[in-house]
Structures are given as C-alpha cells and as structure tokens.
Length: 233
Image (cartoon, rainbow, N blue to C red; front, top):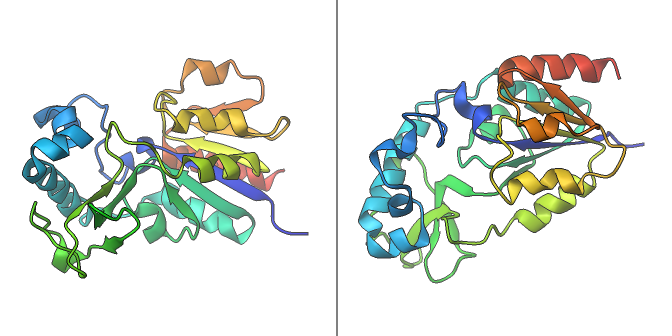
C-alpha cells in the first residue's frame, strides 16, 4: 500500500514569515502601484516596461529570502506522505525547501515565457534577472513574466482540481479563501476526507464547515501543530 496522499493548498500566508509581503496586507506590494497597471493583461499591453520593472523588483527581493520552517516542515512530510502542493504563490520557496511536487496556480516569478508561444518558458537566475519590454528569449521570442495576470484564465486549475479530488488529507495554509478559483478547491475534496485549515485569521465560512479542523495560527506554528496531529492519526 502506498503512502497517503496529502494535498496542500497554500497562499500568501505561507511565505509571509519569510518576509514576502502579502498583496492584500495594508502597506503591501500594491501600495505604490495601481493593481491593474502592473498585474493585468491590459496593463502589460499598455506599459510593459512598468510591468517588467515591478516584477524585476519582486525578483530582486525574492532572491534575498529563504524558506521558513513551515516550508521545510511540509517538505519533511514527504517521508511519510505523498505530498502534492498547490500554491497561489509565485515564489519558489516550496521548491527551495525541498517539496518535489508543486503546482503554481498564478505563475512563477523566476520564469518568463514567450508572448507568442505560451508553452515556451525559460527560467531566470541571479545573473539574468533583468527583463525589459525588448527582452528576447534564447530562441528569439519576445518574452513576458510567467505570471497569470488579472483578466487571464488560470491554466493549472484543472490539474489542481484533480489533485484535490484524489486527496486522502487536504490542508489549506495561509489563505483568506477569497481568491478564486483557488478557493473553490475545497468543494472538490471527497466527502469524509479530513480537511485542516491553518491561518491566523481563518475565513468564517470554513469554520462553519463540519469537516474542517481550523488551526488558528501562523504557517510555522500551524505546521508544527499539524505535524503533531498527523503523527497521532
């Protein structure tokens, strides 16, 4: 018999303790930029230079950050569970902590992709962070951030739903459950499958769901509690 399948849905609160600002916090990343100017399809068409500047600043910030204890605890669970991580985060902290199966719903900050061929994606490294409106990929394509902008569909949601449907245990970490389609994943978890919800300010709707165990805590504290719970199962 294989390992139980543990499926995680993580949001901005997962990375907050690594020093990465959450979009919706007061004084968060959006403060100096109108949201639709830097994170929408229309904004990119209007002013690609501004959009590239915004994501370059986020990349420079990301490379100074490290995975926190919650990321590492999640990766450690792969010893006992078949762990699948569905994340709304565009950082690479899950991967750097050692998680082997990570699905990014909203794109990946350290990648760029072809404007004309969405399947052509290149990874960025510390020596190649700067991208400009005229940036060309290795094969000559005009490139854009590998980010799901507002006004664009979420291409990985279908696979995320499949993972949620196959979960033996489902865990939500650090999300307000207000961002769709990610928030809808709970609806696809099979009846009877235990659900744990870790957040310091959990959404009231989740607390009213009978099959959800709410752990009112930050990601790092919540993961410690979750590991203790799983060890007693």
